[in-house]
Image (cartoon, rainbow, N blue to C red; front, side, top):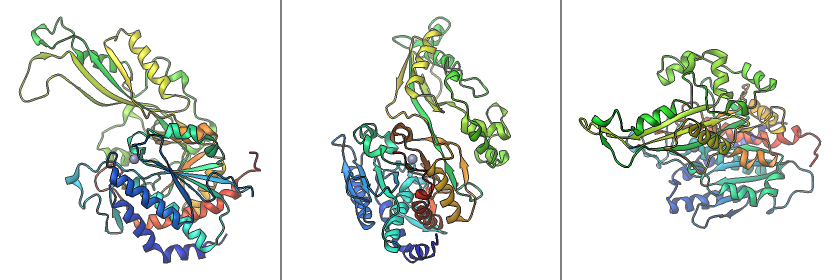
Length: 466
Ligand SMILES: [Zn+2]
């Protein structure tokens, strides 16, 4: 299909699109800032309306920011014309802005410098939210009728654990399951500038280990007799992972579904520059001395067990010779199929109990997510590859799974909806960090890419069996 009229409309209205993005980024939609979250919801609804989408809000918990449902067709109705149904997931909340003094321009005063738009939340992921809605507006202005039925889910708690999403996916299970594919929230270009498509996300288990070895701290002269909570905790932690990075929790490795031949073929096509990667983090060597394909395999198909922080005892000025009776560690594990975070937490409890670490309490956080995988031969994956290639003129890089996480399983895979993600960020977007930014050209191209997905998705749908 010829997209010159569509592209011309988008180029002619690029300032309007940019204005929409800037206005959305002005709103500090951070967890707990109710007025800003409400203003953001109103703004998203307004953009949806401009694109001819029907939008409404859903609250599972009265005081939480709502989930907004947007639809190209009247609420809850499934087209009878046989149009495929594409779901789109984005979030309108953003990470807190601190440390504030590291921002060159204020995080909620969107500023353009050298073709980059700087603002908190612009890359993660307001740019994608706006680009996709604006593409619908462009499509309607240029061609009128859409060849797909669209359903949007915009949530406001992605950055804070998505409290309501699980209940939402149960309450609206049928509405979700009618979708034939889903475009997920975020996405980036790699260092070479090629667009990246990810076919899934890793699961995430966050937990805290609380170790209590006595009722009070002791003089370190008693250190040969009184158990030290920090040592106990360190000893326990060191049983969870081998020095080469292999997770050594009892029963963990046996549950992992090995990558398929199609997965491994995707890996072969991925670029890898070990020197650049090490330079980015200023490290001498990678965990386990991994290089080349082994590094890529660990990144995409490997699991991680990461100590995020550890605390206890005396850390102030000078010395305090004390045996601490309390210590805590926060850890997270990135999970591949078929590791369920709930099962993993149970495995950790059993593993520690078996080794006599009964002083350690394992606390599971809300918001842990399952891993999700989308086969490369699905309509959403194939249409996305085509759309990205057509919009950017470059062959997209396909990640078999994203090393990050999100509730893709809960919203999509659990309902039989394959999901993939691409978006308007780049490798220097500084997501979650100061000076978060996107390149304005990537934003405009992102609008054009979503327009192409609208057209390509129905063509890649097999005979509809639903
Ligand atoms: Zn984020």
